[in-house]
Length: 595
Image: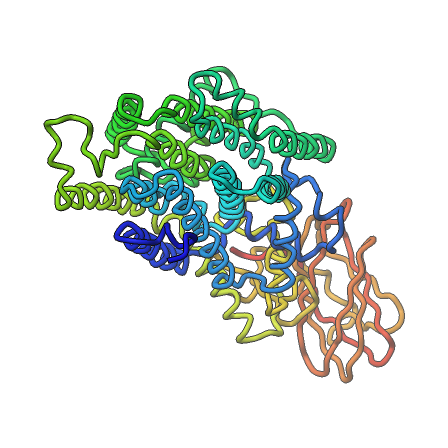
């Protein structure tokens, strides 16, 4: 068998394939039941309304500059907008590719050891990455970054184990650049790489590991640091980033919730019990206590019976946790402890934790193959008991992850959003001539914090059904709370004064005819015009700086228009037509749609 397939050889390779297969099936099933939410909608709308320019790619997006994400959004919005199966397959492919990379790295760090299978299961199944998998926007923040980070580590390990310097150096620098152009969190890649290099510097001991790693990969550090500095300088010039703020008490509260209630619980396969509050997962108190105890137990065991680089590996993990916490505090501390419970912000910790655990185990006693180092437990060396131990660890962690997943599913699958959009698209397909009265979408779909970007016209404009909004139409509809299109009904009206002709009302021809209201109106309102005509004619309706028109058809009819929010009060509208026929306007009513 070729050396490149060595990682998949033997019983351990077969079990790894099984772990990856289970991950593929479970994540595929969960993704198939999920849907778009929040940022997905308004970012798709922004991309659909934009041209593919440098200004669009490098625009300041809530303090972020991520041109490769913007490019992806643009391609999706102009190619397959709101096609969830296509995006779900893309998310799944990146997720599974990351899992395969983890196995390749573990196989180089822990060749022939069953502990790599346990670590693979930990990375593959931990619910810590679940939210960032089921939600497209969150998955774009997590998985490409993790994939780039793992690729860089894999190349570094290959280089250290005899690979050619130039291609590996160039590959790592390019991967780091790609990751930075994807998301700013990639600034964590260079320090993680350096920590891995230090832990791999087995030829020296103590603090000399630092200088040895620095000298051995000097040009790599020069390359990645220059790339990171150039990006950060450009980022600072392109954005106006405000600090996260927060009092010392808030900073401590966020730190505790992030590390104690979120990261520690997530790494142990939890939360096994708890509540979902918006985007945050609040674990039960007993879950936090048990999780912290398990984390401490594992760290103590590693420091006691780990490999020669165990202390450095633990230091790298703590450094990564500190950096991740600092990033959260710098941008989100003012939200209070609740923000630390959001799994999106801790999900990238998982790959760093698995790497550091592998580095700590490397070169030490094989707990699952050579016993735990105590003569009284030598029975674990027997193949049957060894298999039982591996099964117990992998199976036990899997069961914990099942409970942790159950807490978050289906709350994070956005099923209500799927139903809403499905109802809207179904009703549009039944009657494509309907026109939607444009409003802000419900907060459950898109928060009003983004202003007009949460309007239906913005988020649903890219739909393949090409819905119309606010255009004059006899079939004006509003979107109800379930996403269905229903006829517009007034919730109170202001009518126009009766016309001078008892039968015709207001005779509209080429001459402008003012139609006063019984009371002045203001704000964005729906307008219903009742009329009849012997022949077709284009009628113009104007008020202040606003003007619109509709085709008056033969016979008695009505048409709906949308009066925008004009400066000042509107006391009348002016009517005229193209002169092809006289149009009798028998009534005009203005009001807000009834909810």
